[in-house]
Image (tube, rainbow, N blue to C red; front, side):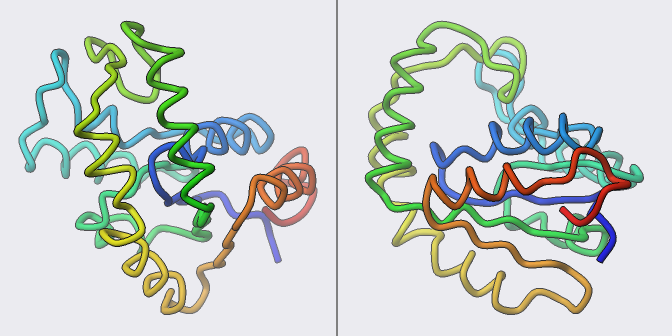
Length: 180
């Protein structure tokens, strides 16, 4: 199977979507698209839905990308162009502790996967309602998506940090050296 050039990465906050996207992008020479940079404007102001969709449509039109972020209501734009979907279905204790640690480690600093003007916050409401509740809020939807992907889209489910490392170690060093 030829290497995928348009890859989506899904999963809970703290699972490592952005980190994996950067590593795949660097290894395969693909641009990385962080959907949160389309969603958040400086000062943590949400983008207008039409502006978000426009930016997303422009990004998916490119020949190759690694795109991280859930935004499942916008899969209608992404799935038709996607060649592989990676779901980081990690245990709650892994992603929740990573999200808390990330908030503390980066507090007050801007991250490239969030966009300028959005310094990291320690947001207890986000951590409890969004991150902690991923299993009841979004996990079933991701599982259903992965089990029903259209023909021709590769499904990759990684369930532990060890499986993520093994996946990364088995990535080709370029798009010319095998499948991603």
